[in-house]
Image (cartoon, rainbow over all chains, first blue to last red):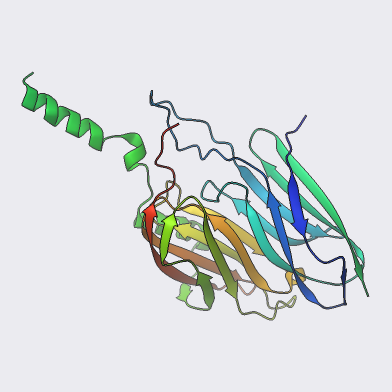
Length: 109
Length: 147
């Protein structure tokens, strides 16, 4: 069973064909960089989100590879071009079997 | 051992603390960029990279990067990589775009371990590379605290 957490995606519900609109995607995740040590000098294992992919009707729109330098609760603001009505899928994957998927529908006129 | 010698030994031990010396160096950042670029030449410019010049807390730093591009299937921005010169790991984030993105622009929040120079390296669909750097001063750094 994979771990999951709350994710919020903000994007328009309708758009005109050819319009470029912004998408804001944030996910709740308390990271552990993997570079911290306890007072005994033991390294704390890494626990971060590794990848974020946004697809539009199955086609990739935006993808990010995250390393430990990305802040906790990763936020991405990016753009997409309206083509036809359908769904956007947002997928976050990470260490320790982390997986969160959010779907959002869009109507293109 | 006398007290003075003990003091010197403890100083050496402090300077060898693994979490003090673990940060990347400018040359490691160059190596990280070399790993992405391969043998292609890297040009300076074209990438717009916004990073605050003075950062109060390195734990969450808002950044924004973009490249002016028509974003058509024949000419678009393939990726923008953010590389740090003083974080424990030089690679921070890599964002990949497609013609469906409509605009090669993204914002996110990163962590900075120290005052440093941060690079934004863009890869175009024609295979060329462009980069820009921004220097920033960090007052409270990320990653230094113990658990």
